[in-house]
Length: 456
Image (cartoon, rainbow, N blue to C red):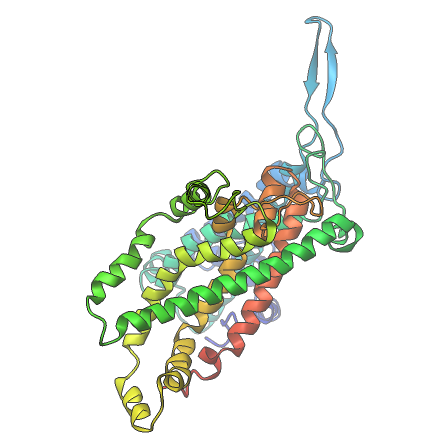
């Protein structure tokens, strides 16, 4: 029986119910819950029937008006009408492209869930038929409820989180992806104006057709990769070195030194970055002190010179990032078996060789996934760039972007400042694809995966 009731192949399950099902089971294909009701499972059958009636009511009263306009995203534009009695112009609301897209997408998700319940209804009717044919009585509604606290307890725990993920993560994500295929910008703002589908025009325009935008994408992509590489590597290796130095047997007051560096974590990152931004300003304390002591005759453009600003953000990121890596690597270093170092020392291996052959492989094996996560996180590291330089200095060669802007900070500017939502969504998709490809390749080629069984 369990073989027939497996959901590993739901289409086969559905076909079996249609082919092998009796009249009561086949009736559930038309009227949901009828197979359960006719076999004495009244409450369960009525619930399925209620779902069917509620869905059809939702479809007719709410979903269909929006689904009919999904191909155009609306045609009626807001317009003025003269009210002779009041002697004023009144606005007549037209279609709202955003609501049409959002509610249509919501209707699709609800329809998919209804189809899932429809399949469950058929499977339940077929299961009841098989139980009845074996001479047993189908389980009551109370028995099914009790199973939700026993054999089906995983369903009880996962149902609410699953709906939450769909409603607050997947639905908004799909909505924003669809925005990339429209012309939703400041000139097409609902409800005053409509936006419509433009296909892949945004991708073509961003990647090669518009010279300024294409140059901006290529330049910011290159800088994003450089930034992510150095921001990840410097924090990782300097954090590891710092942890190794503090963990040396000859170092005293280890807790004191760790506390000193951990203090930077205790201070909120945005506070540290904003203070650094003020400190490195052309009229900030550092430039004033340098000029007062005669070391410089003019302010150093730490944040206003493109190349220098890029170096500065990497250095400042080390200040806020190294303590995190130090804490993580400290725990890993303490777990490396001391016998390995003793054996290496007896074999005549020096500190450098010991580091390359023992410490580094062990660290990379344990912290490989963390390193990959940090790299992806730095590709999308909004805080450091935006709070320190604001993406500046601005450049006429770029489209609404600055020299230190990452793709993610440029996306933010396109959304908040320029209200170019379709282009911002396009950039978001590009960033996601790049991040996903790198993460999958890097993780599957890392020693954490390839040597998972053999590493001891």
